[in-house]
Length: 463
Ligand SMILES: *Cc1c(COP(=O)(O)O)cnc(C)c1O
Image (cartoon, rainbow, N blue to C red; front, top):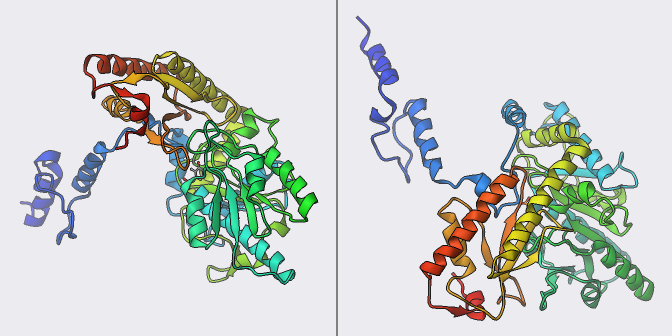
């Protein structure tokens, strides 16, 4: 005879998954349950809820990694208990982080890649904050030394990712964001120079603008700032937001000068978890030289054993992403990254070709010369019985997420649709997507979503 307790246990183990008392009840949503439950049932219930999330590989809106090799999964599991901040306990993870910094410094043509300062972050947002803070601190030092006021710092950028709006607001900096004008959707040197003065802490060009995927002209802006310095004596540094482009340009656009080859570029941020192909949760911030990173931003911590310098907004965070980044560097090398990214560019350009052939669409960016993406709008001067928002909705019914959105200041009237081509988007999947787009257009012909709108009305339509 089994003891009652053991009998219950046995019962629990053999009962069918979806027949147990736990899987037959609603999950608590506001209060922690009083009792515990078997791991198997808890796992099942949570796992099942997650089925309602979209399929990440079909999410063509995100820039972030959605395909990783099994070896990366394995390393991530092995690192689940490693806290990257604890450099005394996990010195080899710290060593691997350092190697990544130096490898990136070399990739971005740092004059002293072996002594360049840099760190990993949770992503480009944190890295941008750190880069921006260094700019503000350096500017303040300079102004104080000259006996000038330090209460009105400003920064200049094109249409930036939201992290720069956060940086400006959190650190009390006036953001001089160059608005879009007609067909000009990025910054130009002329527009930058118009906004420069002695309170400018830095100019932030984006290598791979979020809205369109285009690169801003870092070299031309740097040249213009050289001339500006000659004329006015004001020396304004550049921080490049290379969230996507810093992991693309070195491999497939090696002749483009956007990095530490330009002496005016003092710091760069990049997202390891975008085109760096690491899993979610890692970015990088690098400074050209020791002098570009003010000492008093660095804290020394000794309570984990040893004396560790840290410059970060976060403290504890997993080490796996950093380790996986290093794995990618070893596994792919320059050749591997170039192969993956050129394949992505080919897919983007093929999609742009085919979508451009469809009657309603005009391609704005076709994947060539910027990041691995494409975007388009509805052709002007025609009538449509659907909007790009309707097309996005329709494609969702096949699992594709192809976002439609309006542009920022001064082109709020312009609605575009964008596709990011990431590692894992094969030519075959691209063909299936094209078929679905054609099918959606046929569907709108038979079942118009609305009475025909002029392009202007369709473009201005907002959800
Ligand atoms: C994605 C992105 C960011 C933010 O990066 P996270 O890694 O998501 O924090 C900043 N700038 C640009 C240009 C981006 O594309």
